[in-house]
Figure 1 (cartoon, rainbow over the protein chains, first blue to last red):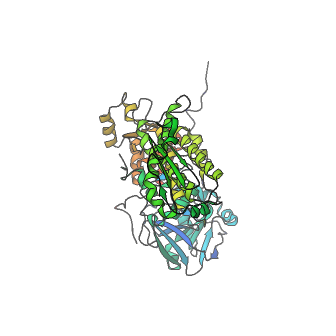
Figure 2 (cartoon, chains in turn blue, purple; figure 1 turned 45 degrees about the horizontal axis):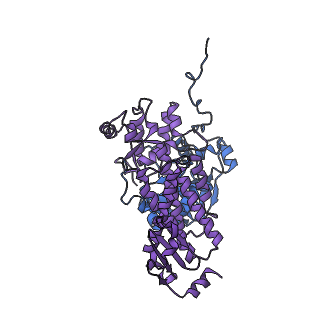
Figure 3 (tube, each protein chain N blue to C red; figure 1 turned 180 degrees about the horizontal axis):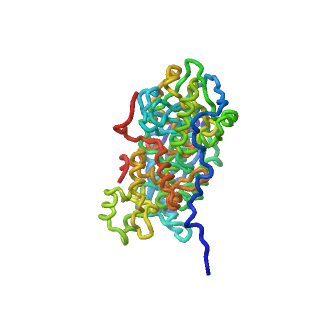
Length: 226
Length: 304
């Protein structure tokens, strides 16, 4: 009996049917509209001393980083709770988060309005021939190329506003710091250890357990890579 | 009469001499039990001895050691009950008895404090006690789906921004979630003893040192446990493991973090383990690189 099998020859999964389209060489003839806005307070979890001077990577690392490190960006969320799930919510299941007690929490207010490209706006998405996957894919090589295109083509754009991959309607911002660092007024709220109530609240909301909130579980810190 | 008014009526604390009400122990002399009454009298029967204490808010702290003894006894009872029903429940592993006792102490201790210091009804207190015992049963014996259901059920009502959090309750919920996660891990991992027919302890360590295997230390096991997904059918490490471990370390993930990212569900898509089995190592590496943890500053990091 002849058994036909296609499983071994077909790539799995099929060649990214839902992939975000790659950034074109230039923007469409009618560029997306920017919106002037003055956001309320925004929140950032970070390790750097000054959120306006974040760590930069020569080949980029996060969603809208410069793919060649040519311009600085930083990220923040509009919710001081949802910023936790944006940073730590890697999977849908409950998670234990280890060794993050020293990460800092900062908030920022705005000294002036900024020009924002809103990737949650359907007109903008349509103008760019994109959809919301630009905000959820973890194919960061591709999203970084979009960032570079938008940064280089829209001279007035100071930030990208986009839906949270995990935070849903609580939007994220990616700020082009070469253009709007002066607008951001950061205030450090201490590290996570000194914000235990907030950490526990966020843990309840998003099924996250931060190890430092349960010190007696171990007695001594666990080995990280036994 | 509310608890508060009863407290005022009781007029402070008194402690009866051990044995003063020993006859109450009756046929249960050998058993340890505790009865918390809403009248501020707490009857403790510990082995052959019995104490009756009456407390108010000011003197509560003086009796915490007694209460801790009582809760430990309750934990023992709970464990005994669990062990006695092996036909329907999984036996508690010896190494886990101590942490389970500690957790039981904490939760039941909280219930006891509620019993005489909170303004809740007897029915509410009874409900809380039932929830605690149910939770322990599920943590000790439940499968993954049951654990998930329990965690969902334990989410506090109104867990949203701006609602003040009770720190002790929130810590208790976090502990419960942590136990559930570690219990799940134990179901997804092999101990050194289980691996012994295939790999010696020394060989396992050698493979770890070479970055071809990783292990996790849990509060419930004396030794290390090895997530099973990193082995092939011959219990050799998967070929992709060195790259996965290296990438996870670079991303700042702990060993537990790597396991969580690999086995966790993601937006109804395949897990990292499933992607790896399907030959999509590239996607798995992308998932690991997308994790934001306390990675060390690389030498080539740029700073403004």
